[in-house]
Amino acid sequence: MPYVSHRRPSAGRRPAAGAPRRSRSNKQAIAPGRYVKAANPAQTGDYTAKNDFADFAIHPLFKNNIAGKGYKMPSEIQDKAIALGLSGRDVVGVANTGTGKTAAFAIPILNKLVHERDSQALIIAPTRELALQIEGQCKLLAQHSGLSGALIIGGLPMGSQVNALKNGANIIIGTPGRLKDHVKQGTLKLNNCRMVVLDEVDRMLDMGFINDVRHLLELLPAERQSFFFSATLGPEIDMLIQSFSKDPVTVNVKAGETSDNVHQDVIAYETKPQRLDLLHDLLLRSDVRKTLIFCEMKCGAERLAKELVARGFNADALHGGKTQNRRRRALDSFRDSSINILVATDVAARGIDVIDITHVINFDEPHSYNDYIHRIGRAGRAGRIGHALTFVQTKAAVRF
Image: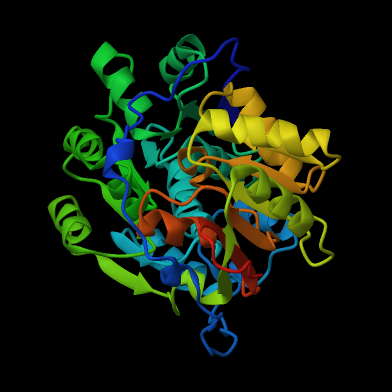
């Protein structure tokens, strides 16, 4: 029996449950000079793994699935975290997105579930897109295992999620708001979740989900195994980890900030029509191959995507006003290069992991500098050098 994910296409629009709202009046003023910086990638040698996937003490089925995908040598975070996870230790992983962290926690969890089929695992992600990516990886790793999964995110029907939970899904993958909705309605019981993963903990903190996460963790069994993965650690994250883990082992493989791999610069403009024309000219450049464009509002993202399509570009929009199916199609088209331009809002773009983005363009300036760092980190992935350009309204000369 193949790994089964219990989800159906959404029939209508529904905002993400518990999605945080930020006031535009609280927008941080950012000096344009902070958008200008040359790439300075960390000078580190290639990591030599101590194991290959065949060395890990995991079920032969998972070894076959991994080998079938052509994977032999684990990444650094996988090499160091998988063995710890298999031994039952709580793990804190500090790593940038794109380093293979999903498999670092998924392999130990799936291996335990295939031997303890009455157990469940809870995986919490900050966004729908990241939850979908985790689900996809789990499905690949767990083929023919008989394990089943439930995807608990906004934009999908509650009824199908309730059915998946009633059928005893082994792996529950969801966003904090929708998970909390099910807990309130009594359709999600967490007393059997003996493993838990918090992925991109820093993003959950930034998005205002930390209290929802604490509430969910408090409902879990006292005896459990915990995995916390984050690109950064701070006092609030440390406090969360210490409160909900037992003697955790920290695996830090972060060589530097993701943005260190990104050339950053500004494009000055005077009027909005000029800004659009400058963007048009920029997108025609031969080095601009796959581009993620950020807008502040979903209406602006939709309008800009339609304008670019009208001008002959292969573009689509990704924002919270779209159904989950349309969001997934837009992201899939961008990932497989059916389109090479994706116009997105901050919330919708969190969790995007497309390694070949060459340019990030801030058509609208970000709400905060943390949002800026997150935006530009979508480029410069997997050791590549990326480019980030921010439109700034000024009378200064135009720069590229």
